Length: 239
Image (cartoon, rainbow, N blue to C red; front, side, top):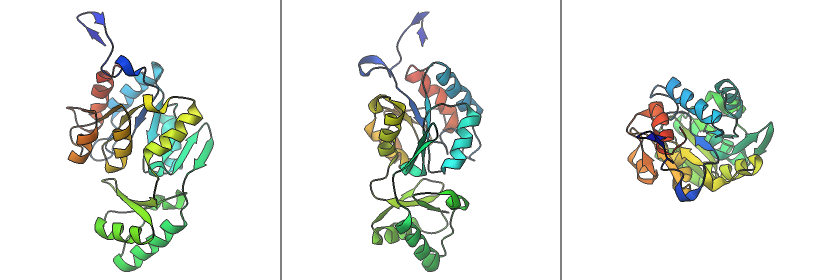
């Protein structure tokens, strides 16, 4: 960035080195509150790509959805799908969890509480998702009975094996991409982003994120939802 005509490093460079990749959540992070893609966010991330920063999409969504989205958005990094259960890079796919127990838990939730599966479950490989139409506490209770974990992304509920997280998946993505995992910048706004926001030296969220997310993010932007992406990238010296 430039200050008084002089080129200076952003707050994200300094003593911890160059950012190796930008890891971004999708829903609420590069969209608006109605899940419509933010054109400002996409423009900013494309400029980051042009400057040599690969963008890694990290979401609770499925690999097929994210694979197409990455292509049309023009990003070059890996994909972290199903909240860290699935990683893809250059058509190599690594499935980090198993779905059998999660499917059993889903059937119990449907019978006991009338839970409704997400349409995208037909493409999921390692977790299951359900609409947030029942109590999350009930979902947690059933998940725990099966030795699983439940996550509330703010848009849906997800059930997967313990130990699955976006941060653990980022380690796999970094190996596939041959980059330093701890040099990545993470941007997210949900409970399922906490592992990234906590563990990376550079992380950020927007002004409408839950307080639990703001507490662990290293930077909280003033802007809302996808409109915060450019502000965050400027703060960290990417733009």
